[in-house]
Image 1 (tube, protein in one colour):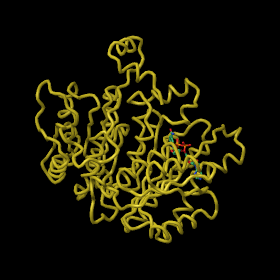
Image 2: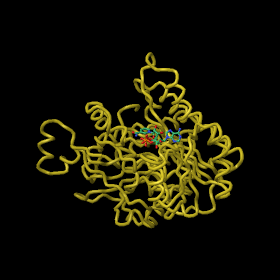
Image 3: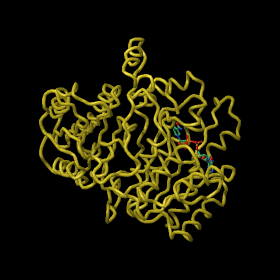
Image 4: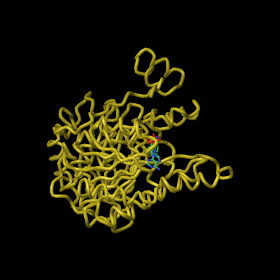
Length: 450
Ligand code: NAD
């Protein structure tokens, strides 16, 4: 999809002209390759600060070095930094929050284009007393605000709340949030905990070798990009889409060497058919991505009943029905992964989207509740909430609406289907076991639905 401003702003002479007339000058985001490298942070100088050298700091340092990064404790004058990590898991009270200022303030002008900032804080739910909860939660406001200051350089800031003992689960999240794999994930508070039982092995590259995945709505758009990413990481991917889209579905499947499952997910027999397919063909399924979804926008006054029913049954009803069978019959293997496609529309609401917004918010509640049920089997259940993504759907929007959606985020540009696929892939890997029941936005810190 062509973003004219991004193209023009990449030329130094035009960039100044664009700036002088007050238009945003987005920076081309540096995205990583399709497959996880053994050492994705190779060559990266990571400025690392910690309040106290305890378990989290030791684990972080080890994981960063294991991922190929050089960890430095002291900033050098004039140097530019691609990654800055601050561990404040050990701070106590408001005085401890000063670490946020002391670490980042001196280097704010040394943050490179496309840099990654990451704060590690304690888990607010474990705070125990209101003061500790307030301290842990304060980091969120800091990260969301600093994200808005550095976004114009294509840089992002994210926050990981680390539960006690969960530092053993930081390897994959550190690699994701400090690399180009998370290019459009910005200003997100993510919780890494011990809820779900860990798998025996947590491979960090070729992370999905031997896994079987189902992607609904896999013929095109975000679904096709997800199928490609999962396959690139080693999974055998089954793409499901409506029979009317079979040609597109077959083309996608041919590209990734997976399998096609032409089916309408709202067909009452779909849950059983899917369960039978995976039991017979693969003995089960490891990853289920509930991506199929539609919009049928009308203000509520003008919305015909069938448009309400259609959106509710595709975007929510079918997902719950399919999971009921796949989980009830244990077709989803132990250690499995479920990822649902929510939307920022399910967080903030959108004019003309009462039907869509209801379904996407429903999924946020669903993953939180279902994750608790599935934790004992090591199954994680999460949602991703995309913002403005450059797809056929958004290309068809009227120019002004498209421009507003594209620019109203910290990175001043739309995301790509691949950016959403990257987040889905990350949540599908064994190494993301610490993350469950959460909804993570991939929206470049959209100003909609703060
Ligand atoms: P898309 O329209 O390009 O693809 C959706 C796919 O789902 C299509 O291939 C379609 O045939 C399939 N599908 C629809 N109904 C189906 C059914 N009943 N049974 C089986 N398959 C069915 O959409 P997209 O932009 O790639 O969006 C994918 C998901 O991401 C959706 O759930 C959408 O709500 C969500 N999302 C997208 C954006 C965005 O900006 N594109 C933003 C937020 C959320």
